[in-house]
Image (cartoon, rainbow, N blue to C red; front, side):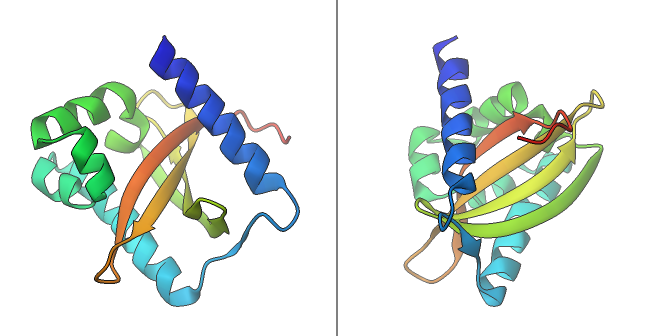
Amino acid sequence: MRTWLGRVFLAIGMVVVASLPGARADVADADREAIRGVVSGQIEAFQRDDGEAAYGYASPTIQGLFPDIDRFMAMVRSGYQPVYRPRSVTFGPAVETPRGPEQRVFVTGPDGRNWVALYSLQKQPDGSWRINGCVLVEDTGESI
């Protein structure tokens, strides 16, 4: 219950901050392509059940929270079915936020429900991008 409630508050906070004037800007073209490649690579790895590859797209911060592939994959299977087994995936905008770049991905989960996956990314010292978190927000089709 506590984890679920934390995710809800984080998702609400991310939506509020992203909707503030001047709170977001488009990500540079080169970074946008690299970020999209990282996110799509991880989703493809989930679909193949390639835990090692999927884990490799996670930031050191996420890997520290889930210190082995089995724990990481168990977390994904239990809490992120829409990105673990999506029926469809459509990339939305990648925007800069006060927390760093965010990639929005519209997914239809295995149960047919629609979601917006808000991926936060972290640039590594070598210039590569890694996924530093994902928040799922159900896409009800209503505008805010």
